[in-house]
Image 1 (cartoon, rainbow, N blue to C red):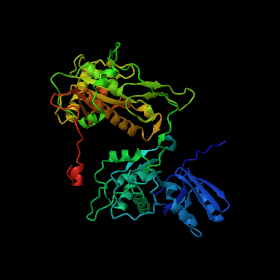
Image 2: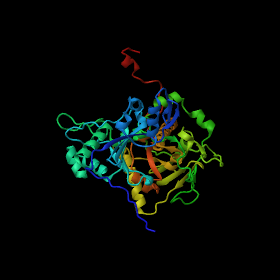
Image 3: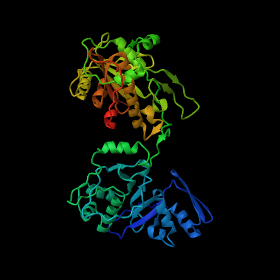
Image 4: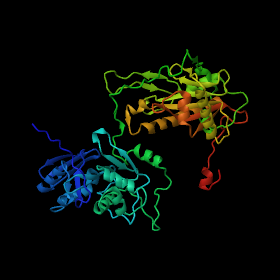
Length: 504
């Protein structure tokens, strides 16, 4: 018996004009009832009446294979008009004469239209928001080009398509970019037209320059915003439990790296004493401010203990159903959090605190205990200094910290359940923790100050963490409040009268 290995065909440039093929997305389910047709898809359900048997047949064919656009438009044009009504359900592929695909445009937003092969200008350049990444192993050999500005994802099936994209990272004529990628002029024109039609090229200004649109966004900020909210992508999002096959991280972490000994039990505040001395909520809300100066006497261990207990302790853990594959232990804390996953942890870098030796501590939020993280050598202590220096810089070099609170996230507690939105959620949780720390510290007469930035790498080294598993996501300074800084407000402050143009 002779076995002949069948190798996949190779895309050959210049083999003839590229074909434009249409196909319904695989998520679309068609149900035909005579001359009527129902389309069910992730965005809803539509029923189309009196299409005619021929049109119904062509649509059913589009659900299973790529069809030349000329065939789709044949007849009375009903099918093409229907696809133009629901363009977000249709993929567009450029292929060679035998059907080998070069690139496929997949709509990812309801605002997408059928991407005509737009005529690019004399020169083309890739959008500054576009990025190229490889697909998972089950799509070996393909990669995708995406942009938060584009309502399409472009799958590049051939290396030459990727080479063309690389060639237009600087403005150049289409023919020149095609030659650099090993494509013929016709293939280059078609691919450039698809890039333009899907919104993946930058627009050119009359003077030959490139319009940076929108100009006030950084790449990573716009991408993060577009991908962590619905409407600008088609990726499954929300509480999908996409990682059920992996073990969950514990609701409350156990003893960590570099932690030895029993730890330091913190005093538990007395409810009646706290309630008796706390100012009213409105006084605290109106008096809240960032304080960037400290009293001569530093904050005390008792004050830190009360602050952490009131703002960040674990109030209770509600066990999940062991028989449910999507159940997990609920963590109840003083601040609200999506899914009550309890992924945030608190570490203290202490410089000055009465009753506490300088160094790094983890707050054991379940036992209300500080666990010292001993330095294993000079490098750890140097990282501790780097962390404090980063905090000093974040205050415009105005504050020598007494205590730096580093908020970290155990990302896996969120991403085990949530897809696409996990990091956005953890940042929202940091915000509510900040506000809780601000209000409690203000009520206690301490000096709070949230920071807008921190050093991820220094934090990982100083705290003994793997930054891809648990990383710093927020920094907050706490110190003793100077006597000349008011603690609470005695009335509302606003600009209502000024903006309304009336006196009050």
